[in-house]
Image 1 (cartoon, rainbow, N blue to C red):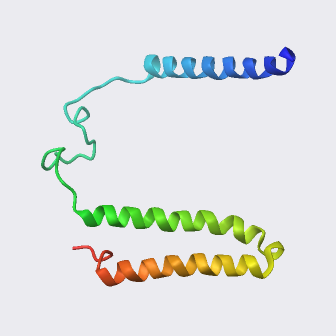
Image 2 (image 1 turned 90 degrees about the horizontal axis):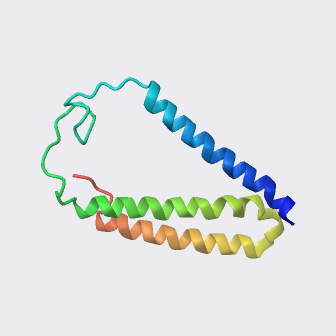
Amino acid sequence: MTREYLTLLLLLVFVVANAVVMLGLSQLVSPQRPTAVKQTPYESGMPPLGGTRERFSVKFYLVAMLFIVFDIETVFMVPWAAIFRSLGLFGYVEMAVFVLILAVGLAYVWKRGALEWE
């Protein structure tokens, strides 16, 4: 039994040692030239506008949640499409109801104007 875990233990030791060696080498070999611009929180080359505690518009969060919802829809549809033929009529109806619920939600959000960015 310990022989099966020996391979896993050796792999774990190798991975940790490899990570430590690569981090150490990158600190030793890489050029270190800190400047005031590089030390700013945002390295976009532009000075930060406003404070870090600024409030975001609620529409930003709504769009983010909508993205997550439709991303999850894709995650559910890909495995369903892979086994669609073996599901038969039940699988088709099940996905049609799922898509219909999401379409009603999208129509509601669209009608409320949550997708309009100002």
